[in-house]
Length: 160
Image 1: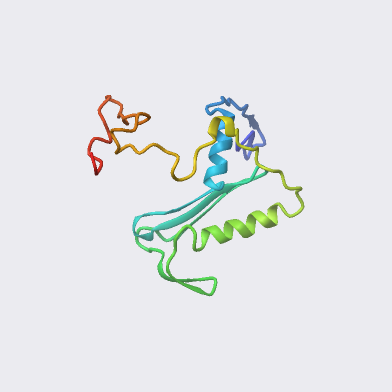
Image 2: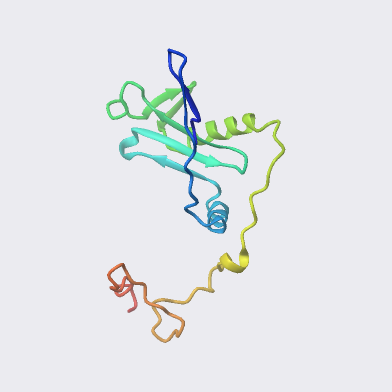
């Protein structure tokens, strides 16, 4: 919860109590954090804005970049920012390094907390070569992928 209390100009305070509910199994969240690298870049169509969002077990933050004069009119292409020229600003080119530098500085005096290890019995996954070939009708482990209406999604794969 970002705000727990708001104080008006008149000095009156309004308190807010969190109404949080667990929406995601903690083990699923742990596995997702492990496989995603705990960060995500983003760039809008036409380079109107770019961002990086990421987290550690101790802190979460997002860096978003866009022109305050209007990101649709003033795209992030052919720009010089901080003395560096960018043909195009993407989430990894500028927001990512800003996020990294900021998080390192913010956590400098914080003892690192490790991510919770993934439950490999539940989310062991496999490396290349262990997944069934969905195109091979002789593979007894093949299960057809279905959409919400129960229609096959892999019926048009090459080799079928």
